[in-house]
Image (cartoon, rainbow, N blue to C red; front, side, top):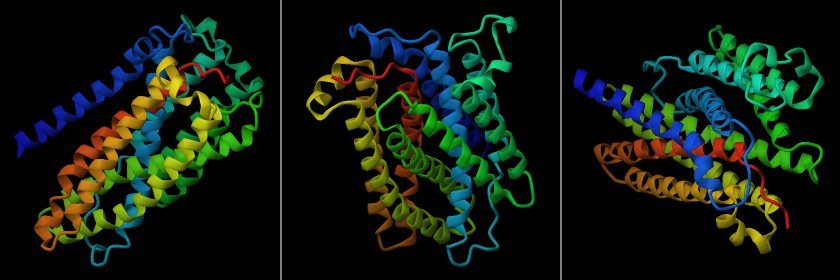
Length: 324
């Protein structure tokens, strides 16, 4: 048992390390030969955004998995996994604070405290968004520890709205349409990745005491995930066409840093989709033991989804493609 726990811990650490390398080393690889220049500290900003997105996925996914579990017959008395939401909120606060420090120096990496103009954050749009995200994570963490943890959904919704507005400043064409697409895309992606993580945690906890309930929970998640994947694909395609006109998409996917990162994300999502189909095929088998074998490809799926989150964070830090 201890060896199994140690193995899981090592696997998680390796996954986190690999995910952190994506925003740290990804910019140089994506920008190579494109003639584009990234903002200072792009790697650090990418890591902070990866932590912010991961914290959002963990908190939103935990609430989503709990909602699904309540709809599985006969599991009202089964134990629930340990609450990760407060820890995720703490990580989100740290990431939001780090991003706010970058905004306070005019989107430069602060070298010392005197470089930061904290008071000036209230006077800029990006600064207000950074402060909103920090405060929302703080409130979400307090709500997660309260007697009504579902109340954390309100500050989490505020974070998603803030991220959608940040990604589409008023200077671009039809920013509200872009913000709406990002809002749906980010919400569905957080539910998909975070929800699967916490569904697997419940399945592992119920492996011996309620294996049929665990398989039923994964099946219920799989049915919802189809809708989430459709929404993610549709909004992602529409957002891509807003960034890159149809006649330039194929060219910019290989000649721009943003396009290369986007292509990597698409390939990873294709792998995730294949793993999800494999898990769904196993869920359709006749015996409970065979249905529970879907746990294996689902574990790999959630690991690849972690890389998708890292690449998504990298996308937000890279320069946007030129609209030809």
